Image 1 (spheres, protein in one colour):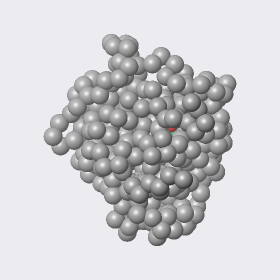
Image 2 (cartoon, rainbow, N blue to C red):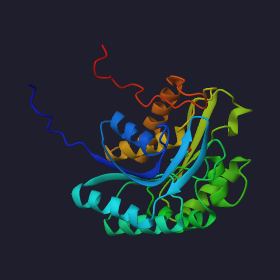
Image 3 (cartoon, rainbow, N blue to C red):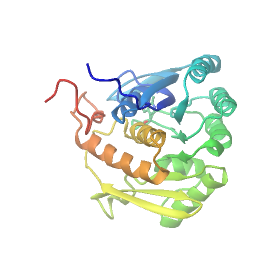
Length: 278
Ligand code: PXL
């Protein structure tokens, strides 16, 4: 038997919804943390009813359930980084903010999930308001897509200065850095590029990756924010984490196996050697 590997595996925690079909939410996060060699802990905020074809409903956890999931994890592990995803109610967000601050949680990635690709609202207005006020100030990075950035900023994003203004609002709420995912924004002007913009107090950096024309995009947002969380836990900087995570997601989209009848999940094992494979 080989000697035990004495490197410590960083513990990443996701606090998000459960997608039983496995493409998004905590399942995507657990696979992504694992793909980067991190240990995955998770707390479920809501059980959603969905598959690759749509989201049909959700049963949210009580705030007390979320607290009782989180406390033993922090009692037991030295959590290296945390990611939040679907946080459906104001009360759940209050509990999360309380626990994260009591436990001095570090490297917090806030993915401000608003709506599923299929158009199902995953958060109510009061909760979004609360997330902006209580979680953005704790965030090392917040990762909205265009729609989410528009909802948080309260204005449409149609030009370069709209991006800057939206990021400014999130930085002013206390987020340390803001990654606005361009998604389809550039697809008319530059159909071959997916461009995300990372803002912090020092300025803006664009990350350009290949835009893959496909419907195999179930869980891409969750996967990107989880990958950033894992890379931060591994000790990389925000910029390096975003860069590596974008590459991973691009490969994961390209490698989708086309599972399911709708928007297929991405391949979370992109670039990972699978046990038993030669
Ligand atoms: O991608 C947004 C998202 C996040 N979290 C959960 C989801 C979805 C989209 O369906 O189900 C649990």
